[in-house]
Structures are given as structure tokens and as C-alpha cells.
Length: 150
Image (cartoon, rainbow, N blue to C red; front, side, top):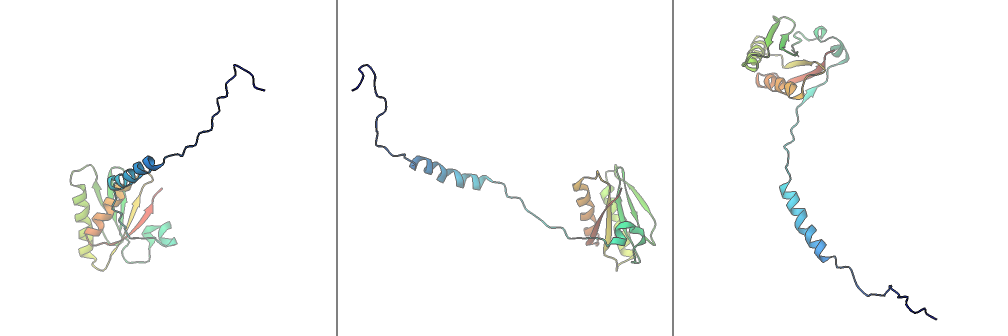
């Protein structure tokens, strides 16, 4: 028997979950997110990995001209076998132009050389290395090797 005063709150209800409004939201939301996404242009910069002997001592490479651009905190150093060492202050407004002139001078003196080693310090920013690589390519040195200095 049932006790009086006590109610049974459980009722059986026949219903279905309506997923159509949620699906409509996703149908509108996904194309909006895809069209508002920022698509980055990905480019590839070809580099050469120096051989074991070149990585240990870049000045003792087997080639005639071991052209190297060292990126220091305040200056660039352009040096190589058979060329005069050039120090270019990075604080100058036309430092990139001076570096381009120095590399263009090396290219005119040694037209058969297409290699340049870019030596960077551990705290050198990526954009600075890429800027030097762009300058080297613009002056006729398409083959760049990256070396980390200690």
C-alpha cells in the first residue's frame, strides 16, 4: 500500500532531444571561423650545412675563399681568405646598405664564389639572421651556411 502524503516525483515523459538548433549553430560557426582565420605565407630558405671541418673552424675551409659574416651585438664582421676584414657598425642607419656594399665588393672580386657563412651569437634574433641572409642573396651569394658562435 501507498503512504498518503508522499508524492512520487518521478514521471515517465516521452521526449526526444532536439539537436537541430545546435547543428544549425555549428553549420554557421565553422565557415565563419574558417573564413576569418589568418593564413600565413610559408616560405622556405635554402641553407647549407657546413661539413664537420668547416663547423669546427670556418677559416680553415678547403675552398679558396671562406667568406663569413659574423653577427655581433653592435657590429657585423665581413672576413674571408684573401679579402680585407671589414667591421660595419649595426647602430648606423645604413648598416644594411654598408653590409650589402661590402658583400657586393667581394662578389665582384670573386665572381665564382656563391657561398657565405653566417656566424651568429647565441642571443642573435632570428629576424637578424634572416635579414643578413636576404642581403647576401640580393648581392649574389645564394648559398648560405649557418654557424653558431660561442
